Length: 115
Ligand SMILES: [Zn+2]
Ligand SMILES: [Zn+2]
Image 1 (cartoon, rainbow, N blue to C red):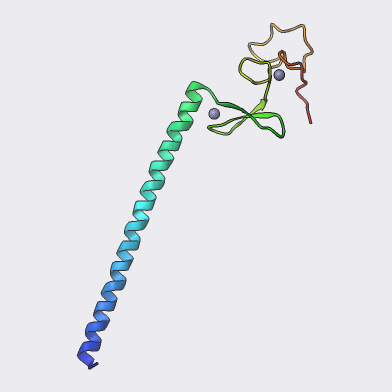
Image 2 (cartoon, helix red, strand yellow):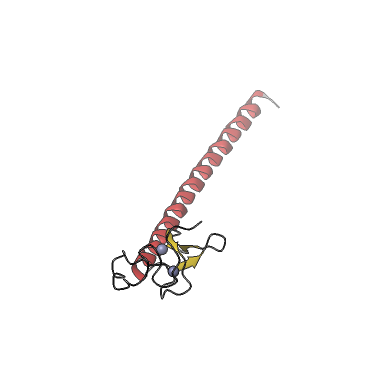
């Protein structure tokens, strides 16, 4: 390999690494776009959840309730309550159940403080 060829080869190699760099840059841009798309889809789903109401789901081990979509904790899961959440007489909308203990769920009778 003479000096001329060596130079040519070096040019080609430099060109290849430049191409790789721009491919990498394109991949990063594309990945960032995907992240943005996923984020907006996620926001839409969470927004749906706050509009239609949380999807009350029971945590089997603890007996607590959480939303299956946005995953926020919702208190205790209730077997008798219409929305499957425990409600207490000091809660807005549940004052009419004044015949039960203040600290207990108006539907299942379980206390708010549980282990
Ligand atoms: Zn939710
Ligand atoms: Zn209850």
